[in-house]
Amino acid sequence: MTRKVLLDNGVRVVMERMSSLKSVAIGIWVNAGARDEGVGEEGISHFLEHMMFKGTRRRSAAQISHEIDTLGGEMNAFTTHESTTFYIKVLDQQIAQAVDLLSDLFHHSRFDAREIKKEKLVVLEEIRTVRDDPEDFVQELHARDVFRRHPLGRSILGKRATMERIRRRDLRRYIQTKYRPEQTVIAIAGNFSLKDLIPRLNSSFGSWAGAAPPVISSVPRHPPKIHGGTFVHTKRLLQTHLCLGFRGLPLGHPDRYAASTLNALFGGGVSSRLFQEIREKRGLAYTIYSHLSSFSDGGMLTVYAATSAKEAPLVIGLVCREIRKLLKEGVVPKELERTKNQMKGTLMLGLEGTYGRMNKLARDEICQGRHVSLQEMVSEIDRVSRQQIQRLSRELLDFDAMAVTALGPISKGAFSNGFGGP
Image (cartoon, rainbow, N blue to C red):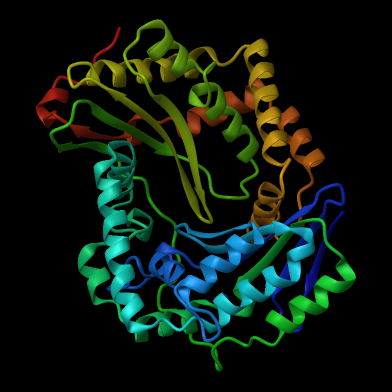
């Protein structure tokens, strides 16, 4: 059973009761992320997420940690380019404590200057961790190469220089600007009593008014553009890490299920064309896959591979060959059916727990303004046709707009003769 309720101040609450379970997941989703930051604020969304756990008027940072451990639950947060989420998962009998803890962090975090100073060191270490992980780092570089000055090209973690400048007043101002009731969704999945839950949420969140009067954001969102080209970042590594980027689709696009199907059969699993051709048949890469990144007003389809510097042009050439083959020959019914079954299985398994259900409830509300049932999603996957895949392949997999980012012991001259491959 799913239901949507508006609290007294307009906060949207989306719920799914799963009476057979003994747990509940609660998430607060704010429609503000890294792309909404102004100049000099890069990384503040993510840093604010960290600081929410560093003490409130009632609880110290240590008390927060001890309380969630005592409950035997899990509490965490994450930041994307378009949203910031705080969530908790506990046993159903502890829902009152969970709501109290989440609301305390959300409304009453102190942002103590000493804690800010310490947490900056933690985030700087997180930035270094990404730079030490070539697979993560090349994805970050690729976004910057493809989106350039657009906010989607920024690192969610920010940069050292901007992190060092952030002060308590900056966090407060950002909250006043971005954290508004009308921009907030509370998603709940698991076993709960609706009669008890709504009054509790209204008490904890329904009287929150945000900044009064509302502070108008100076960073309006505008659609991104994909910039093609070849971008080489030389670094002493044992492998060369590659990203090939193509245009994707925005969230909620009518062709989104077809795009997901195209991605799955092209590089989304161990039976995909790229995995079978480049890893299984030729042994040129241990890791190769494709994935979709979708935003409110744009998207990208990205292929990632790690290989030797010597074989990098060949691997890119083989990816391009598989694209040409797909454009020319399309997909056969058996391949399409197998891919659809894979997608439906992955979807159903991902929604077996309260955390997965909570995420889906929130994303449905933010992206489409309504709940999309599992039956509807399965039906949409079943409706994807070979003709739709063929058309979408031609629209998205455009070599003229392809962007290639390479990170490793390689120079741009390695690609001067184009990309190899039969």
